[in-house]
Image (cartoon, rainbow, N blue to C red; front, side):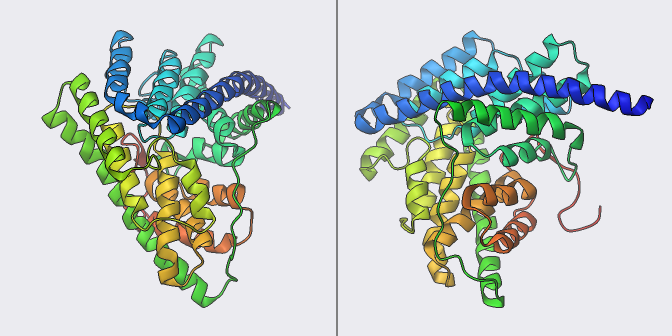
Length: 404
């Protein structure tokens, strides 16, 4: 009876904490969504703003310097806090909010979910601290916040819950956080939906029936996506290293990076690779994508984030996966629409090392049709993508190829 009573008390405690954090992040997530939508609309109607990208980079660097956060590790800081190796300060939430909005307004190539993880993690940790939780429970509150913010922005509560538990230590799921993560994700999504923001979802056409041929085709695409995921991660890490080596001054690197993106935008004559590029993802899912689009997005994103601009890597990942899958799938005998969806899920798995999250995402984004083929693509991409990922602080506990 004593144990049952303790479990009930723990359940009630985490239910209350999850609801509190979920409400906060639901409201913050809606405000962030509206802000980024407005910034995107303004930029797309006034493409000349991209020439102010170097100046906006200086502003972002200055903001972080003024707040004493110039050495903050961003999403890596939040991941480390789950392992109790760091503490995400609350100031991280408004900083990443404002700087991501600036990046999107002036045409930097970045996403939003990475920013959501930082906002959610810092808010979750802050609430846990104010409620006098111990260090282990603060780590759980951080995961809870990550789940709530991700769900509020992307509209995938199940993916958000699993991702928050899976991202830190690959191979070890933090099931102790399942109740707070799930409840916070549901509350965060509910709050945003009350304001009329619909969840992200796509209609995939020409999903093949399960057969030996479709499985082999999917395996081939999964292998290619694993390669692209390694290229993308290497590009992000190498570009950051090059900036630090040759342009150590953060203000100057922001100017140079912003100028390069502006010039490339002018040369290409399109704003398709600026911002998150969600409209290009939709186009790819409908079966249309330029064969070089994925490579250009890798270049734009690496230059932008390496220079010190803020945002996230996940939506660019989905952009790269969708356009690559759409362009390559006809060569493998798959329909472009289905290939784009496979590419999105396989690449997401390859760069995050989170197969369960990727698999759940396929259902929330595309429905359950073709589930087995998505599972095949995820499995292949996970094994062959190696041990590098978007987040350097992530630990892969178990080998991808052996029981060790």
